[in-house]
Length: 480
Image (cartoon, rainbow, N blue to C red; front, side, top):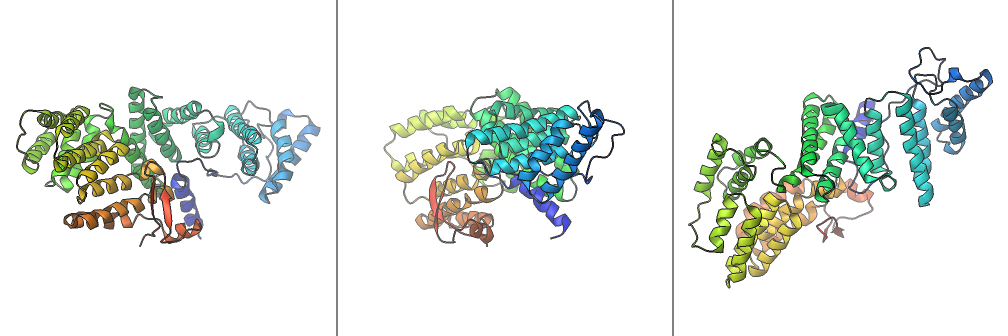
């Protein structure tokens, strides 16, 4: 493999090679080539340097710098550790310029961390690693890149030993300091932490809103200004972060009209005669309090009236439900639909309204478990109806960013139960075969590769339980 190919592979793995659970990772390090620190010329640090030491101590410390690097090069970490400590603690500022000894120290202690099973010892090793990051930032100016690396590695490797609030603030400090030029590798974990903290009510929506827009600006800048293999990394980020953060659309006012127009108006243009599509996009604009006189909103409204015309229902909960839905009052609409369902004795009508509720939860409130619950209720009332199965399949297929990093194993396996539902829709209701086949064709290519399956010592055709919120047993299949 060429150096360029290897560099590209490392960057891609760095961005999406991790699941939601923390995993051990290696940061991208640009190693300095000096075999030993040269004599100091102009020091860039206030920390103790070799020049500050007595001649005898300086000589032994310089030797330690040389000897520990030889041991690290051959992965003799047991021998490297005491030598590194001697060099590091005697002269943390090295020659006043080079900083590779900090990276080497992290590499040494991370080796012991990975091979340690006792939790108390793992915590001490993690604390030492984080202290090395801190010492580097104390000794040498940091534009935010070292803090970004500290946050990234803490998220994926040492998260069980780091305070979550503090970790989030590290990411935030990097973003505040570097703005649109923030390091690409922090975007996905920062987005995930933001999403989780909003749902857990650990951050107020107003602050979360500002952070989300910071992230979007950084992604747009990165996509526009990337070069070579870094563009692949930004492509992965652009697939994951915006899709994950779209899950916060269920909070009214979290995103403004411009956000919805930018994200969804092209969705309408792609299928401007499909009622479900037209209605979904129009109601998003209503939800966002877009100007009703905006030509695009007027166009959507006219399309909805044409493609989705329904005779006005008689006075009662159903009419109130329609009114609330068309005004973007989704939760009120659900309440009225539920009232209608409770009063109805017709299982078919019940099923139809339950599917409407499921679609509201899916498209607007962004509550996937609730959407599935109502789709399942619709199936109970109308067993041979394919549409609820298709909706559940779309729920599963849309869960890549929720259940994994957007690409890779944890995000790909959601396609298995999704395709199961599309296939089931065809079996129970041949009238939906065309739509079901469309989705099957689209998502088959996103299934895991045969290599990924083999690496996990699994076999095609075997049963497999997909976790996350899905919790369904399915069959292992490889992308064709």
